[in-house]
Image (cartoon, rainbow, N blue to C red; front, top):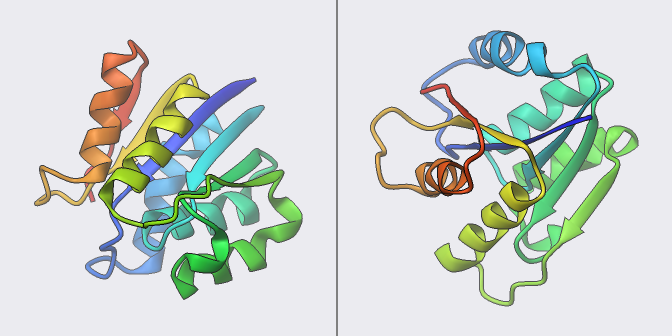
Length: 149
């Protein structure tokens, strides 16, 4: 079974939901058969990809929060609640402070357990957690697919 980390921007308001569905169909769809996706429990790409995968595939899904899901944004908690019957596991890493180091640790945790990463960075944000995750994937010698949004 292929294991895939998904990372992406939280800023997604510049495209409509149909455009994201189209991107996910093109870039997640080909990997979805017999796959296990690891997704951060955040707003933006994480929540959009979770909902798309839960609605359109039979892939296994693990959601990973840096702290607890109760401390995640409402959009993320709602996406998890709506997809609960499709989520194989929710992992709460227990960080007490939700700052950049906790999110980077969560992203490394996902990459360490997967065979590749699909990243959806915001085109104008070159120094973000998404890019750090993509770069960490490269350092691990694992393939990565970058889909700017």
